[in-house]
Image (tube, rainbow, N blue to C red; front, side, top):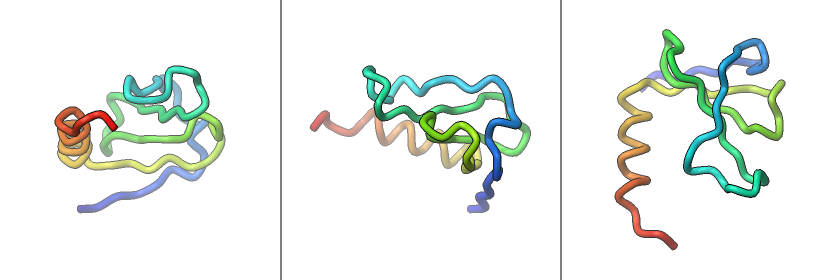
Length: 72
C-alpha cells in the first residue's frame, strides 16, 4: 500500500468533517472527496498542517471496519 502526504492541506479546498468525528468539534477528522490520488485526511485543528492521502481501497476498508466495530 502506497501512502503519501500533502505538506500543507490548506492548499486544497472542499474539505468536509467526517461523520465519525466528535460532534462537539474537539476531535475532528476532515476528508476530501474526489482527489485523484486517493482520500486525503487531515486534523481540522491544524488546517495548514499535513494531510495523509490513503488509497481509496484502503480508506473503504477502514470505514467498513469502523462501521462494523461495536461502540465502546
